[in-house]
Image (cartoon, rainbow, N blue to C red; front, side, top):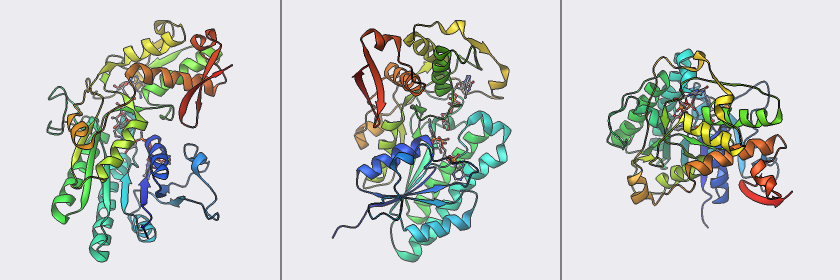
Length: 357
Ligand code: NDP
Ligand code: GDR
């Protein structure tokens, strides 16, 4: 009899956690996620997968916990007995990390250490191998050293968030080397989707466009429009996480598209999709500037392509379009481009389908 594949995900309620859960469920895994207690529901992104755990076909289970609470992490590990752990939980907003540096470092840096320690003890005591994925970030490269950035590029973090991710990266690598843990660092460049948090720049833009078209918003206030990012599609990136844990050897991988675009380029393409000129709607607000900025990120995904067989499936323009479209659909609007063909693009079951209006 084959053993059920069992995975534990921190950050399951986030953008990546939701896509990764879908991928693992599709692959027949039993998925366990750690959620935080909040005063209002925070499970919107995973509700469509959830079935009452009393039902026999339940495959997704949620546990209350927090990366700042080591005792609970240990208890959940003992209860779930996972074979794979994906550490996606984090205070993941770079600008906010300047406002809340201690909490950011606690959840991102110390949180990773707590989890690694719990895994080390569990594995040594039971002899069961646990494979670990650490959600590293291109922000670790920070101030540009090499173009494009690859696995061997030195880190130069420029925010409390990035410093904490560098710490988590090195601890992950050290646990691999010291205790023979199967622990991988993904160094993922920005990845976006209709499920992206509303305060990250891409989603802030696409959501604002839908509201402008609906007539409920007049202006969009942004900070630095000149920074450049290597933006990919989140659904592609969670596939890379899974692939890393299926290899014979644990290793570290850059995951990126290999293309870079400025915030201005994103704005231009996004507003053009609804036949508007971004310059008529965007104003500057210095509150969105960061004390230190990361000006240019562009990744070299050669290693992931060669060793994991990973490829991005969505171009930059397609990504911008699918995000604008999803926000238009969410407000019950359809894009002018699509209506002219008497078709509407609908986001259904995680795919974009054209349907007659
Ligand atoms: P999100 O911000 O969408 O999700 C973060 C998740 O972490 C949420 O589920 C959140 O829970 C949870 N979380 C926050 N604080 C804690 C805590 N103290 N204990 C436990 N869980 C916590 O991030 P993404 O899905 O975009 O990113 C996933 C991971 O990948 C993060 O670690 C991020 O730093 C990293 N990353 C992301 C990239 C990207 O472009 N998206 C690129 C590179 C790395 P809640 O819903 O309750 O807030
Ligand atoms: P980033 O993403 O910092 O790269 O981190 P974000 O979308 O926040 O910023 C990208 C760039 O846009 C500029 N910008 C603004 N950003 C926000 N959020 N809001 C604004 O109004 C605004 N105006 C301009 C920023 O200055 C920046 O240059 C994301 C997160 O998901 C991290 O967790 C992850 O590790 C990295 O991507 C890779």
